[in-house]
Amino acid sequence: MIRARLLAVASAAAWTALTPLALAQTPAAEIPTPADTYQELFHQVQTRRLFPDGKTFVDATPRRDPAAILKAYRAHARFTDAELKRFVRANFVVPEAGAAPAPSAERTTLKAHVAQLWPHLTRDAVKPVAGGSALAMDKPFVVPGGRFREIYYWDSYFTMLGLKLDGRSDLVENMIDDFGGLIDAYGHIPNGARTYYLSRSQPPFFYAMVGLSEATDPAVVKARVDLMRREHAFWMDGEKTIAAGKAHRRVVALPGGAVLNRYYDDRVTPRDESYREDLETARQASLATGRPPAEVFRDLRAGAESGWDFSSRWMADGEHLKTIRTTAIVPVDLNSLMYGLEVAISAGCARIADAACVAEFDGRAKARRTAMDAVLWDASRGVYLDWLWTGGERIDALSAATLYPLFVGAASPEQAKAVASATRAQLLASGGLRTTTRRTGQQWDTPNGWAPLQWVAVAGLRRYGETQLAADVSTRWLATVEREYRASGKMLEKYDVEEAKAGGGGEYPLQDGFGWTNGVTRALQESGN
Image 1 (spheres, rainbow, N blue to C red):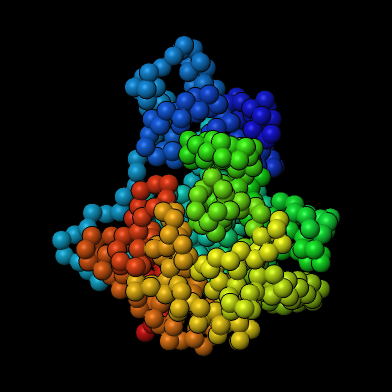
Image 2 (tube, helix red, strand yellow; image 1 turned 30 degrees about the vertical axis):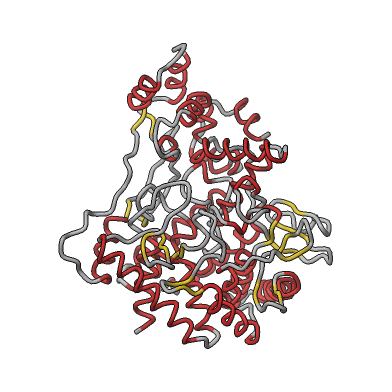
C-alpha cells in the first residue's frame, strides 16, 4: 500500500529534507501529508477527536522541526486527552475556524454585501512551511470561507463569476495563474492547495476559468492552452493501453473501445482531513460485506474528487455511505466537462494556428459525445444518467448532473428539451434546483441545493433557449439566498431549496462566507437583468 511505503521512506526528517524543487519533482501522490509526517501522533490526535473538525490538525503549522516534534511525542509513554491537546498547541500553530464578518443590524443589498465579502475572503500568496500542509501559491486568491482556508479547484470558477462582475479581474487572472502553477508543479490541479489533497483533483473547470480571462497576449494564450492539454493528459492517463471493459486510474474503456472518465484517487488510505470518519465507514462496510478497507477508502476519496461528497449517486444501495462505489461509475458531469475541455483546447489551438491539435481535439470531443450518447443518455426517460461500468447499465437515479451536457453544449436540441421537461417535473423546487431526488441525509442530496448546480442549470438551459425554466431556477434560488440573508446576514455554502432555508447534512457544520454562493448570486443577478 502507498501509505506503508511512505511510512518507510517519508519520515518527518525526510520531509524536512525535501526542497521546493524536490517536491515539484516528486509524484503528487507520494508527497508526504500530515498523516505520513506525524504518523502515530497524527493517528492519536485524529482518532481521539481532540478537535471537533478533523481538518483542524491537518491544517496546523509546526512551530519547530517536525522530526523533533515526533521524537518528543514518542518520548512520552502515554498522554491523556488534555495532555495531548496541550502538546499539540505547544508544538503547532492551530488554525481557528474562519468566520465571515458579523452581520450588521441593517442589511445592505445582496450585491453590496457580496462586494464587501471579497476582501474578507482574499488571501495573500502562500510560502509553504516544512511539515505543514499548505502548498505554495504565488499570487493572491479567494477562499470559500469557514473551515475552507485554502483555494479549492472547482469552487473557484463559480467564485470568479462574481469577482469579474465586481471589477476584480485582477484576482481572476491571479487565480488562473495560481492554478496554472499547480499544473506546472504537480501535473494537475489538486482538490485544494494542501498536500493531503494532491492525490486527487476536482471537476475540471480550469478551461472555463480561462474562458473568463481578458488576456489577449499570444504567449499567455499559448501557455494556457498548453496547461489545458497537460490537465487533459492527467485525466486521460492510461487511455492508450487500457483494454476494453477495464479501467485504469481515471479512464474507463467501454466494451466497444471508446474511453470515458471516472473519479479516482491515487491513495488507498483514509483521508487525512476525515480520518476518523473514513475509518468508521470502512469498519461498517467490512462488517456488512467483508469489503477490503482499501477499496472503501479509495471510493471515499474518489467521491471527494467529484465535489459531491457525499451523495446517493455514489452509493450502491442509494442510501448508506458504507456502500459507496464511486470508482465503479462513469459520471455525467465529469464526462461533460471533459467534452468541454476538449472543445476548449481545440478552440485555443485554432487561436494559435496549431492545425494538428485542432484536428486531434475536435476528434476527441466528437468521439466523447458519441460515447456519452451511447451509455449516458436514457432516451426512454429523456435524461442523462450515470453509467455503472462494472455492471454495464445506467443507474436509474436522476440528479442535477443531467444538466451538465447542456452546460457544455454536448446535447442535441431534442435532448435538451427532454432534459428541461424532466428538470421541471422532478428537480425544480420552490427554492431552486434540487441536487437529487433522494433524501438520505447526505449533503449532496435533496432537499439541498448548491450554487454551482444552479449556475450550470441556468447557463445550460439558456444555451438551448429554455429561457423560462432558466428564469424560474434563477428567481427561486435568488429568493432563497435573499431570504436567508435577511434572516441571518449570512451567505451560506448550501440551502434547503424545499423550505428556502439553511441547508444541512454532511460531515461538518454548515459553513458561511461563501465563495461560490457569492459568485453565482452576482452572476444570476446580472444575467437576469
